[in-house]
Length: 233
Ligand SMILES: C[S@@+](CC[C@H](N)C(=O)[O-])C[C@H]1O[C@@H](n2cnc3c(N)ncnc32)[C@H](O)[C@@H]1O
Image (cartoon, rainbow, N blue to C red; front, side, top):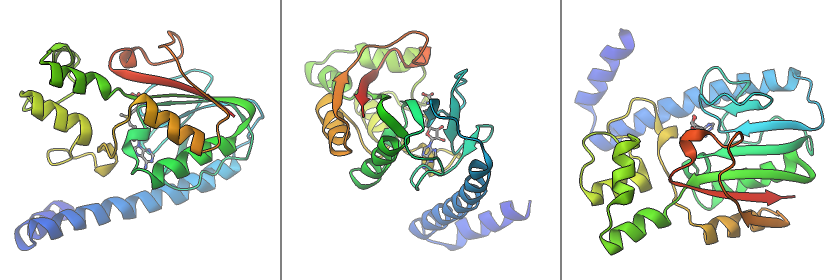
């Protein structure tokens, strides 16, 4: 209640720019607080070599995986822009679906992939997927509608997004103007296979290969519209 009133006063009294920065600051302070608690809890865990991690898991349930995200209800609740409280070379597999595009590029993305490299044992695998940006761009240039049709059918974008250019902008930015769930939901960068391979190699991965959707591993709702990549330490 008190927060609601303060928010209304701030919205009325501040410029839109200042209000947005205040909103960001509130989000950042919450992230710091949640992260600190998550680090303390992660340090108390027994980390068994060979563990499988699902990093940036969101609400997706992956039996056999330790789930890591900022959202409530996961096993390790931390801010993934910061060093992870997980021992070196402990993981056999890291699954990371539709998370990397939420990080700033190149700095945060590089730091995160270096962390993944550190957590994996030699020979361990990072299995990534991100939104496939070649598909929407090809459709736009060639006047094809199948990507836009998939956006509508899968409800990837809100209802106000109707023109192709609105869909493209939303794909790139997933802007938070009309969101209440914070700036962690925004897209900060869009990938194609060449760029994803480049950042994975820069982070130290020895083998990087495009892979197909794997039923039983990748979340079913990620089958369409994703670029899948596998990297080995
Ligand atoms: C699009 S969802 C992907 C969830 C799930 N992997 C899937 O494929 O449905 C992106 C996830 O990244 C998480 N996320 C974004 N930025 C984060 C950050 N800095 N720290 C921790 N989690 C973050 C969000 O909480 C959200 O769960």
